[in-house]
Length: 386
Image (cartoon, rainbow, N blue to C red; front, side, top):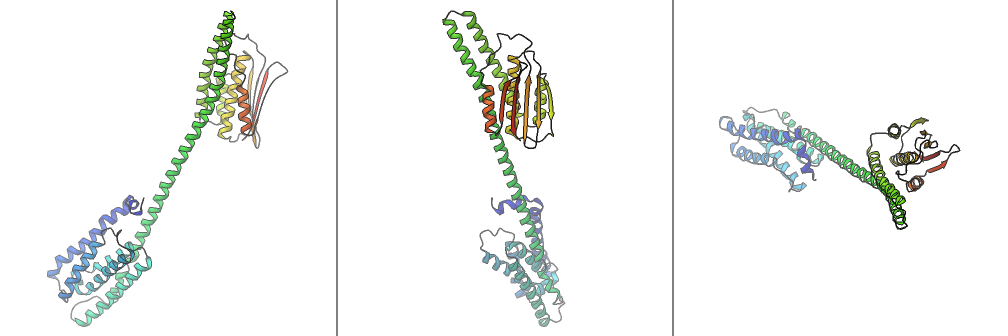
């Protein structure tokens, strides 16, 4: 956007520019016209053209100057200031005509881009006003007149215009900065959303890939058993395939839920997972922040290990431990030997779930170890950098 499009958004400054300045200019013109017939105007043949030209210049400063070059703007503003300064000693008895040079100096400070040019125009107006006042005193000594040194004050409002312009520029810069911050925030949000979608896609790919592979193996086995006349074993394989499909749906939902649980830290997420599966959970070391990728990988590994324990060691005692060190975080899951009989209708699994977790851990610079214990149970240990 251009500067002229941005500045109107600042409502207080817009109110002042669009209402107060035009009001003062029009009030000065109308007031002078109303008092002109009843006031003593010195040298009317000169004063009247000066008043008309000064009024035209005052109205002109209220219009946009975007099509004027810097030199044209400087020339127009100089003419406005000089016309008002020359009119001052001739029609000051109207009380409102004296405002022309002051309004012109203020407009110079607000309209001219160069401070030096604005101050130069204001100084020239003050000198001309003082000189014209002194000259009129000599030509019409009987007419009441301001002291010549008072006319020097006509240039002071230039600082009001400069201050106003600086304030508008500051507000414009602040608005641009706020818009840039909003764009950056929106960009970060879009990037975060894309990253989140990528994580969800990878997690679901792992879950569905492993489960569909197992389903395919079970169906192939069922087909071979059916051709061999082993109907009961074929039906058992089909039931396992169905159980794998059900587990796949459940695991997919868990993966999506875990990925979207942005408000929970890794310890809180694992604690909820442990409570849901009736597993003992403990934390060792000082809890520290863990990256998003490491968090998702550990949650996924915990889900995979707990699912395997439920399948292959039903009724066994299970525990989960999360340990923090200065640079790494370790998740350890243990289960004892099975205390209940395996059910033939449970999915046998594909045996590649932990393999996928091991590959992901390696990509993150960590390790995953899964091995049986002497007691007949199983231990899964995942270590990742924080």
